[in-house]
Image (cartoon, rainbow, N blue to C red; front, side, top):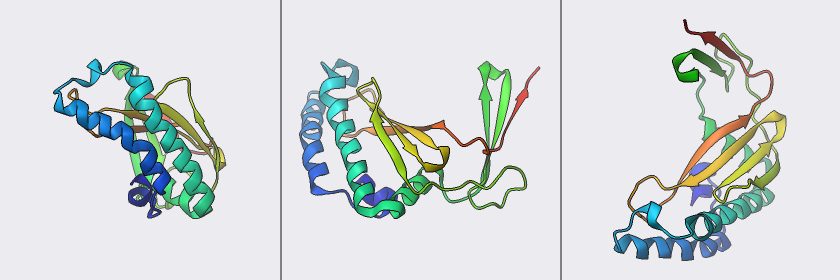
Length: 176
């Protein structure tokens, strides 16, 4: 129940009805001791039904709970505490430091404005990914995938920013 865990707003019965056949199939395949890569037509039969149900449920929860749902969803994704994120890029040729200044307690980087609206939820050309565009210049990619090689009745999300407002503090340092 991602809605309840992430935001405190439980998912609707229609969501669980939509995902149940896919997870029942994963349970069956798990019993056959298959590897995830061996599932035939996996994008269409496993990923697509789940990502479509997730997309529909995001719309439903946003419609039902509005601004409060959107804020809690975003806060779940980024956390509640300020921090500096250090990332290595270009195969170790650069380091990027990003100010994640949610509460405004960091000395460097503007305070982040938490979005209160979802503008678009769209499926990409991939069967397992959607992009969500929020107010304030934010957008995130939600990619569903298996976490293990063996089939199990569980899927995970890889969630990444694909768009940020220009005020987000980032500094790139080339490494020599």
